Image (cartoon, one colour):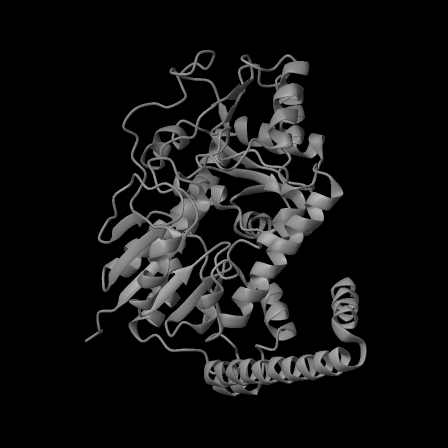
Length: 454
């Protein structure tokens, strides 16, 4: 029989009716673990959503340490380890969720800011990552390609060592793949979200859906240009952006969102062929919109963030049975091509993207066949399947194989540091006394000024 444990799942994101990827992932992790354990989902953002088999609430700096001290397992994501450096000393088993390579993401998030701000943002990301890598007992990532990236980080930090290697030469007990999942229940449309509801989109218009936010690392500009080209062959084609405003108020509108609106206006598409949902669709209502679409689209640029990303919006396309047209070069681009889930095209290739959309929209039989393959793929990517490694780990959570040695080395380092400080202090006092006897108070003052100057 599995022992019931107290588990904290911690996020910085907003837990509400409208949630972005990090909050959705934390919520689903808490729901899966809540079936067997006493789970508390904590956020340092807003919380207006109740848990489902677990407790969901906001926390603060003052109470967080007590929460951790009473937990057996802590599953965390985002900028927490460097902020709360006492987590390094915690006796809890700590699971670090690395599904979002935020240090690479920061290169794009801050891309249009002044250089000093960009370097400072990357430095913050690397400081946090270093703290996470130094302490985690188990690390989660979203794909095998991401796992290669993180093994490199762990190896550079000394976490791939004789202890962890001898315990498990595959290193799966140190870092395992836990992808983003999708709902196991089939989507159900309560009411239309787009067709016949949005002014300018009729019930029989073909709809191409952009199913998430518009961020700097995405390329909606190529999609809009493709729609501009496509409308000659499909005059009633409609492009719908599902959410322009991020549900977390701390996330500002990005430069790409502004450029997207400007290009649509410039080409005369806004309100005719391109439509923007200014808010964010409630998590429980997303099926109403997804099931009004005919194709799901995702496009990005060819850069390093793309190579290691995991586009969670494409999972919603799978869930809704949508044929997918996307940019090649990432995890899902390869999956779409390998499994026949639609078409992956080269980055920034307007004719190729327009052609892929045209082929699907004008071939009803072909689109239906793709839908069948998408449905089969969706059944293999539900949350219970995705989270199985984490659920199994939490049934018998253990510290990493090198945890005891690292703790001992950290304690020894503190002792050496304290001895060094005492040695320096005694030397300083002795030197001050010698200077006082030789040069008087003014000599001591000069020596202090020189020390402060250095």
